[in-house]
Length: 349
Ligand SMILES: [Mg+2]
Image (cartoon, rainbow, N blue to C red; front, side, top):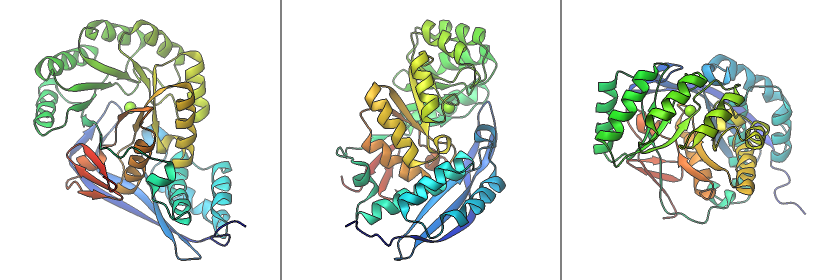
C-alpha cells in the first residue's frame, strides 16, 4: 500500500515580493536594484504546506513578474486536487515558462520530502554535510570600481569571485589582469553573459591564459554552439555553458558536440528541483563538472538549491548562489542552512 495516498494539493496562493539589494547588480544584460520575485504557497489537504519562488529574469528566460503570476494562475486549476507525483507530471507537460514551473516544482518537491518525513537534504540523498562555499558576484563597472569591489569582498572573506564582464574586450582583459595580479589568492570565475564575438573571445582567452582564471562562462551568444566549441578547443581555461543550456536536452547537445567543458545548472532555466536532479544525474553519469547557479533570487529558491549542492557535491564544482549575500540584510539562517560569510552550513553539521 502506498503511504499518504490522500495527500493532494488543496490550495495555491500567489504573491509578489521584493528585497532591496546593498548595491545595484550589473551584468552585460541588465541592472537591478531590488530582487523581485513571485512566491507561491502550496497547501495540501492534510495541512502540509511548502513555498516556491521565481524571480523576474526577462533577459534570460523571457519571463517578468506579470507573466510568471499569470502562468502560475493558469496552471493552478490543473494542479488543484492532484497527488504530488501526478502534479509534477502535469506541471512539466504544461506550456508555461521555466521560472513559473520552477516555483511550483520546488514547492511540490518540498512537499514530497515532507510526505516522506525527510528534510530536503535527506530527500536528495546528501551524505557529506561539511560546509560548502558560494562565490560572490563582482558587478560590471569601471575597472577601478571592480578592483575595489573585489578587494573589499576578498578582505571580507569571499575568496571565490564571479567577475561580470561586458562587450569591451580591452576593459575585460584589463579588469581580469588587474584583479588576478592584486588578489592572487582569489579564485576567479569570469562571466561574459554572451557579450563577446568568437574573435573577441579568442583574443581574451589568449590574453589571460597565463593568469589564474578558473573558468570562462558563456562568452558568446546562447545559440552559437559552434563558436562556443571553437573557444573550448582553443582555451586552456575551462569554458562553462550557461545561457546555452536550459534543459537536459540542451545539456546533452552541448556534451555530445563538445561545445563546452562545464555546464551551469539553474532552477529557473531547467524548470525546478526535479528537472535539476535529472541534469545532475546525467552529469554524474558522464562525469561533467557543473556550476549550480541562480538568477538574483529570493531566499526559498536559493535555500532549496543549497540542498542540491550538498547532495551532488561530486559533480557540483562551483556554487553560484550568492543572492542572499547581496541583500541589504543578509539572513543568517536560510531554510535548513546557516550562512557565515560565503560558507553555507547545513543544520546537520
Ligand atoms: Mg552566467
